[in-house]
Length: 300
Ligand code: CDT
Image (spheres, protein in one colour):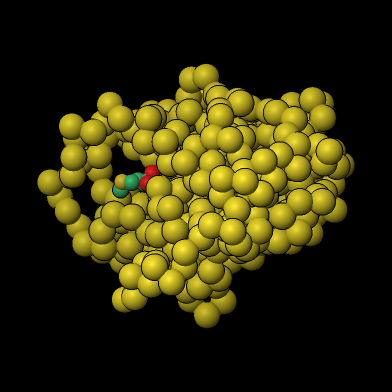
């Protein structure tokens, strides 16, 4: 048995004027809770250092450059790296990345318990729009603020596991999970900021929690992987974000779920060898996949 204790560090809302140092302090408090319960890994949300700024249009996107990180770690985030070393716990965190040559990405990194960045992902499925749509109660301008990620869907060795990464909207796409599954992932970590209200189809608002669980449970089952999926939740700058952070087994069963929209941890002991129950049977890719019939999936 390859057992591992994993945690999700769900965050409540982050206001527009909250400092990154304050957000980091909140995450350190959650890290202490998780470590005291034996966690080896804690997963934080997408864009965990700031409010979800793509909800605002500005004529010049550089007006929001202060929401981006130019290096990692930097002075605001260093205390989180130091806490992780002291507490002997790895972590995953999402943030807005501004590269030295001026590219902007919605990024997540995995940091081991020695404070070393061992995995990085830049979000590929960017939802929303790139123009100012004033009819909306709030914007969803990820296509304006970010470029599509250029690192593929990574799976890397860490904590004696094969860990895959994706971010928020990626979790709704079966292709994300299948690529991670084909690369041998055993645990998929992800964070999200999901508004309860979907202006394009408000008749689906009551289904937001359901669609979150449905996507993650299906992704886990159909690829025989574990997942820790973590929200930034609650009423943030006039926009209600769903909570419902989850830990899901390779069978698709939910084994931990957050309660309410505030800062809190979810935690579970998982057995990575249980991936084989699915990967060697119903979804044995070598035995049963028919990739020649799937070429339409990758044709432009
Ligand atoms: N952050 C993010 O990707 N949120 C999207 C909202 C979809 S509606 C534009 C999500 O898939 O949850």
